[in-house]
Length: 439
Image 1 (cartoon, rainbow, N blue to C red):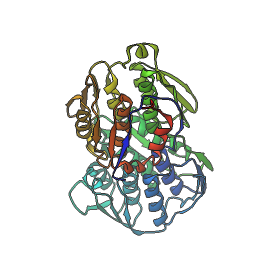
Image 2: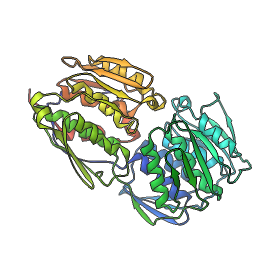
Image 3: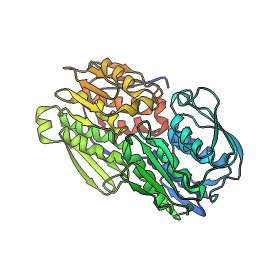
Image 4: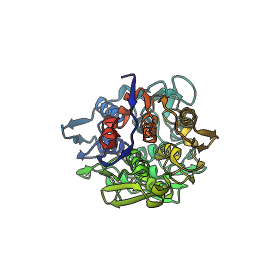
């Protein structure tokens, strides 16, 4: 489908069960593969990015049995892949490309890693530099500092501290954390600069702990990875995706301005290990009323916002929730003044340059937008304009801009299939909570 027309939505109400978290799914698949023993994983995300990880692991010799209920039985290799030579195409999945680069660089084989054209534009030089300091032998097959990569056997230095920049992508740090136990020696990771997106690193640490490796950290500047190996926890359930939940929680707040709501998301709640559950704090600042249990969250416009018919504008540092921050940018269209989203420089190196893309598409809807190196300032128009939204092969652009239809306008989403990266059923789920005034 080249485009999808979303008719005006007058309000939103209902409940949506969240698909499994992409961040958790791809991490636990890799950790289960590297572990000793078999791991039963339940609630895995079934989407493009997790399929990329599954296919890569199977090509590396990992036995994985997939069931119709979304679970998988992973037979761990105990830290050493049987296949020592492989060419892997990893799409545009950063949660696959970065960790596999680190793991395979230490695996003593010949591997070639490539991806979609956009992946070849996403920097990886800081991770490669850190791995080279450990003795890994990595070549760039194209432009210096970017994929594709050729990995060769190297003599890995054991116990040598490794330094990596923290201000570009937290995935570099997560990749190193997950790979270093394979050296079977205690190793320190030292972070240069300010570590971005800390909650995603916290997810990595939490999951490593469940697989038997306890990392100690000094603030966010140093991590001590112990000598050891991964051991299966036996069985693990993947919680619902908090980033995906943000669209429906925002819909509850926005749709509640016109008498709708509440909207409940199921499968993720107060017990979540994902940082994006803190998007609820942003919504509360904008005037939403939030309630939450261990495995669910509910959102609706609060009394004052409902009386005004508008949300409150925000001025906020959103570095800790970079994915859900995109939802906040679209929610800003429904505020009664200018909102500023700060410390989001990491958007520049995602599936697209999200700062530039977001600014361009918000303007189509009539907003005034100021774009900076690490911020976005959004002033909503008096009335939203119908628009055709380009999605830049970026799932989060498609999902976040679908919410503009809550402004009583028709929105055309180009390339709606890009949501298959993390949430193939997204538009059906949105339709399920959408309420429309009969013509």
